[in-house]
Length: 127
Image 1 (cartoon, rainbow, N blue to C red):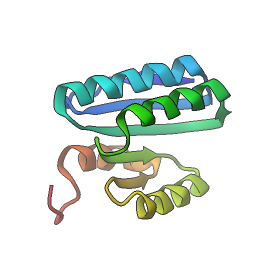
Image 2: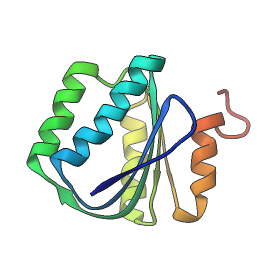
Image 3: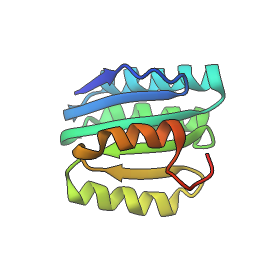
């Protein structure tokens, strides 16, 4: 399930994952991303993972359709908040593969730091 989170920065979309992601969940999250891209020309994502038990096939197809239409060029930053160490490792790998997107993993204790990263960047780095 994806629960959308209110975020008061125009180019940021935010959601919390708890359990299995359905097609409707994915559609709702991607519609928010599309709206941010249409408003701002780009989007950053805050994703908090409480638990993850998979993704429905139709949700994957929904995401692939979104990527065919928009690609990755509109994504600036992605902050993933989770205490799952294996997910933090995967985000580190993805940051190296998808070099045009600044991706960072944060523990649940670092939620505020993750939100500040999306809004302002890390201290000492260009915004």
